[in-house]
Image (cartoon, rainbow, N blue to C red; front, side):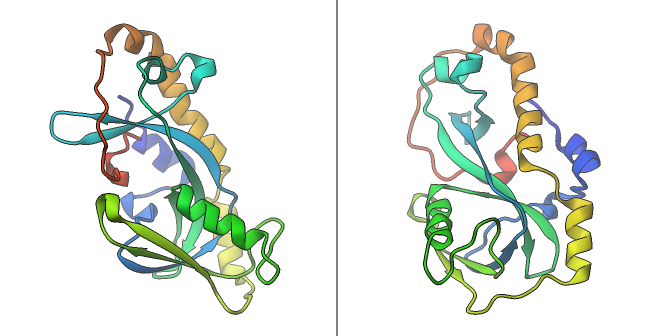
Length: 198
């Protein structure tokens, strides 16, 4: 529906799909370097698999909401991937967000803005049987000067990225309302990041 990968590459310094962090099985050590912004996703069953489209919200007369397709809330933010030291966009679901929120308000690991320690997101299982655990590093560590420079160079407000995606849907919303057939919703498996059309 909208293919803004090139636009994101030029505007936000996202050079390749490797600049998105896909959580792999096992340990995924990261440092959170921006706030996370919530957004809605509709999972639409295609011919062979599900695709994801961003929800523009009921206040904007989202055509998918109008068809009764449920919204799944996700969160987008920037992290340093400790596996290669690169700054990457990370999308997370409700489970990881809630575990991070509990850390934020905990006595030992609480933080006001961003945590001053690394996080290990541990993924186990596949599809609907995927589980996540979130473990904080035992020690706080300062970001290096090089990391601080990279953050200033690469990291933009995640809300800007989400707003750009919504703009594309808004511009096509009228046509979608007319063209979108009644869609039957099943129980989709976890949608791969590469399936999201942006």
